[in-house]
Amino acid sequence: MANVTVRHARLEDLEPLTQLVQAHVRDYYARPEPSAERVRALLGTLLYEKEGIVLVAEQDGRLAGFAVLYFTFSTEHADKIAVLNDIHVVEELRRTGAGSELFDVCRAYAKENGFAYLTWQVTKENEQAQGFFERMGAIRQDWVSYSI
Image 1 (cartoon, rainbow, N blue to C red):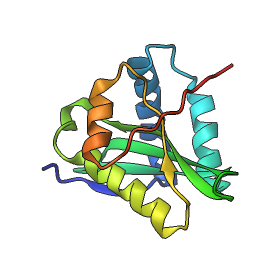
Image 2: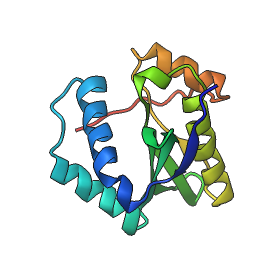
Image 3: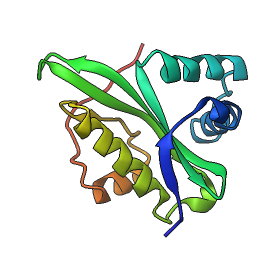
């Protein structure tokens, strides 16, 4: 198991977190990374305007991963829900328990703060992530997602 601490992101995390987010977008989504200014602006919104939260996994004084939760609502439940928009752990700490720790803190945050549920999406090709979430106790849904 990795010796990882999960906590809320702080202002002093902004630069290394910006770099982690940019690398995640570039490497995972295989698309050009957003500018550092845009990432900083988004993270600032989450840190200060309470439209979501950023959690970071820290090991030996450096950021080892992050999770981004956005807050929205469900008419089906007539309640607030948390959306896990991204969860990422640096390559060298995958399969060490760091991702599980980060996910568990997301799940606990949603429960402790009265969200009806925590939801997220995974591409149909990402079998590694699907296996991870199923090991974490998630139940696959039958929804079809669209974007425009």
